[in-house]
Image (tube, rainbow, N blue to C red):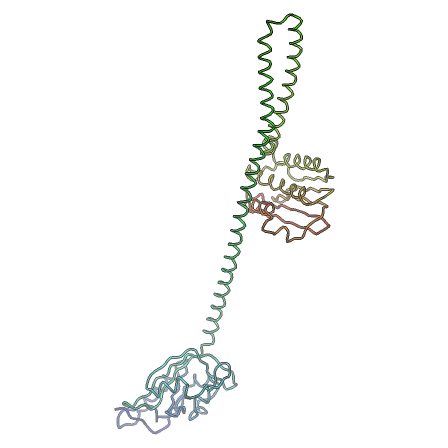
Length: 412
């Protein structure tokens, strides 16, 4: 059976009321054991104190006293709940009958809590993790021993980690939403592109049918007519045969005109699909040809300048992408700008290709170029982004618009 002593010991600044310190049966605590106990309690960085059944402090080590901003001797005999556990973090009173420390030893059961605070002498609180173990004499509970640590840094790290996690989740959510929107736009752009291709196929088919088809039919009828007239030539008199030869020569000239028209139509259709100048003379000549052709057909004053392109060649995929973006820039001017003049600048400098198309037209609100239905702009941006470039758009209502393509050549 364990018994309690009656003296108060003081060692290395730690005060122990031996009414709550266990000693061997029928004997006082030996000085060596007492000193070892004191050194053990003082050597730990955790706060340790004991309380009796009334909640009064019977001993406390210096680490524990320092954590609550007090000296060990002024804590002895004080009600520890009223001294350092009296309120919740927000300042609301913490009733003693709700205290987990008291309830644990009153019921003879240990507890471990990391969601509460202790209060410092200067009236600020700090989060703690504490454990309360009942002090027993046989089946009798005499009090409790409480160990506690300041977990301010742990809480701060946990809060920072939680904040980082929340921010990451928010960013992931935002990025997922952005990707969802981008995917939707990509689907719409793909559908739009397919519609454009289908419209282009329909236009080409109509031109082939209406233009080339009618020309070929006319040529076939003329050929049949000539075949019939020639087969009858032997039956004619010399005078009639000469008159027929005159008609045949006229018919041949008419057929030659039809053939020339057919050749022109074929060339125009091929140019719409892919300008031959792009293959034969390169990108820079194709851009210049396209710019002057557009300015002439749209009746626009053209200010053209191209520098730094001598000796610079782009691979075929990039050249085609640049040409198509340039075409779309001009197409945007034709459809929306209502401009009278056009300024085109093409420059290669520091391994960066810059193409600028600026008009003096009606301009537009910046949001118009970000609209979900701005498929032309989306297509230009996607083409530029595919090759590491970017498209910049500057526009003000009444002051015209400027489209600028920047494409790094070093990545090609």
